[in-house]
Image 1 (cartoon, rainbow, N blue to C red):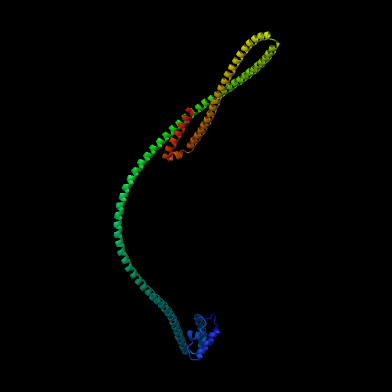
Image 2 (cartoon, rainbow, N blue to C red):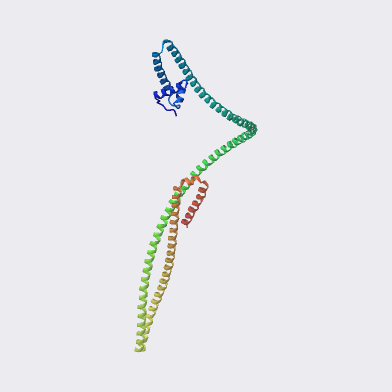
Length: 368
């Protein structure tokens, strides 16, 4: 790297050495003498100053002719130095331009080679494109044939689509009619269910009234039975008293027999009369007892039958109340799920007969 800032004394020493060697002290020679250091502009400026100083000294010492020769020589040397400087600058510029040209030439050669490779690649790609173009034309012909077939299929599909649309509209109309029929059927079922419910409530009320009447009848029969038991106890007490009287009279007969025959006969007549009356009373009492036993047995049989009827009636009422509860639950389910009943018409058609059968079974049980 060139060192800047050379001294004027160094340039003067180098110039003197060149002059002593008989060489012209040019800028390049002085710079070479300094070891290729220093700026050429600086060296030129210092050389001019040294030449000016040397010219001034020479002009002071020389005559006019010598001074003129010296001036011409200095002018010649200055022109030579300027020419050499310009030549050096031109050489440097030329060398720089040559370097640039060589670099540009190398780049152009590299680009040319790359372009050659690209041209080969382009030619190969062109061949491939030509082949692909022919293949594409064949594929286009096939695609056009397929397109024609697809156009026919599209036309067929459009015709089928129109048919399907008409079928769909007819299905929607059928579905609308079915929905209206379902609504009408649901309303009729609701009305029928309300009627069945009202009829069932009326029948339940009638059954409850009949049950209350039967309970009252059972109470009355129980009271009658109690009275019969009381009458039977009273008659039984009378029978016991009559038997005691008969035993007493038999004892009197025995006592009378022991007292005497006459008295016996009299007493026998009296006894026979009393015995006949007593026997009649006993027969009447036994007949009344038999009738009371028959009446009691009949009342017991009727009371047992009425108790069985009451149990059957209560069982039937409980089953009917359970069926009524099931009907109410089914009604609540139907009212809570109207969307399911609307969306599935066959299911509603299946549920409706089951409700009708249930209502018919309830009506049959109530009629029984």
